[in-house]
Picture 1 (cartoon, rainbow, N blue to C red):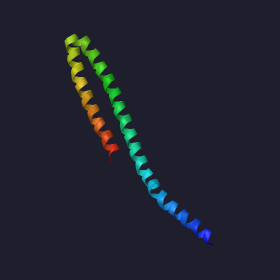
Picture 2 (picture 1 turned 90 degrees about the horizontal axis):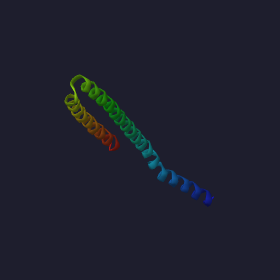
Picture 3 (picture 1 turned 30 degrees about the vertical axis):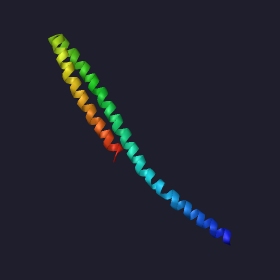
Picture 4 (picture 1 turned 120 degrees about the vertical axis):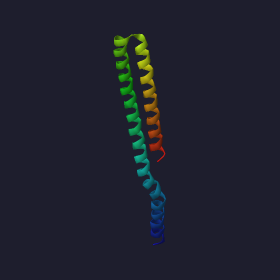
Length: 97
């Protein structure tokens, strides 16, 4: 009978010790999922911005020449950088929540 009580006590102790990390895994999983989602969104926006920058630059090259294309490139590059900074902040926010 003594052995049975020790086994039950050991099992209860194991559940008590293992329980909190299992509960935390759900929160960590959500945080990781949110971080991955924000990272993918940021990457997608970077691809979109790159394609738009290229297209606008080519358009302005044919409409206004090399100087117009250079100006368009610079304006769009700054917009792309700002979007990347905002995306990075969102990723950090998800990772730290």
